[in-house]
Image 1: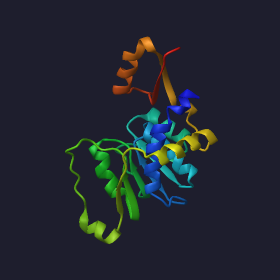
Image 2: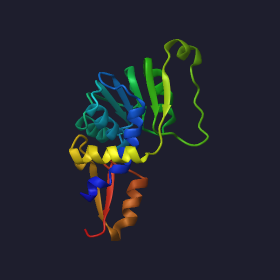
Image 3: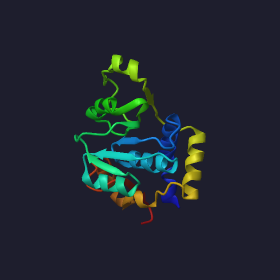
Image 4: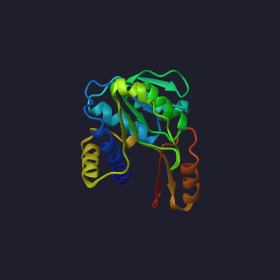
Length: 197
């Protein structure tokens, strides 16, 4: 469908991120931020055999969506978090980026999928990392191969996206749609504008 097709680009970005964190099978995961990117990470990592998966967010409704997406455990941001083999930062909150550094297991990976501004600096615990040997990874955008893989994942049903559209607006309400996008509230995840609605 056209709606499912609107997920090819965001899922393609997640495909690129998840590929960089391989191998995933049997690896514990902590996803920080349960917006659309976080939920797509949960769904794809679950499809790749990762687990257990813990998800965090400041919004309880997004944590419910994380549970529906395959997270084994959810926690409100600010609560103590488990250590994990793969830690994915899907929020621009500086506190989450700092907390991620404390949650990565020995030899694990921290993926910075989101950042909180071009001038943000993050202090790295060099001595601890010198002994525990984690990898710090970054992912932005999607290459053609990532988009092709995302299209196949959606078409085959390996990653379901149909239930992630939370709001639909006709073209004449486009201003309202963009306002909700810029200031997400409650259950807002994926907002679609349907010209013929």
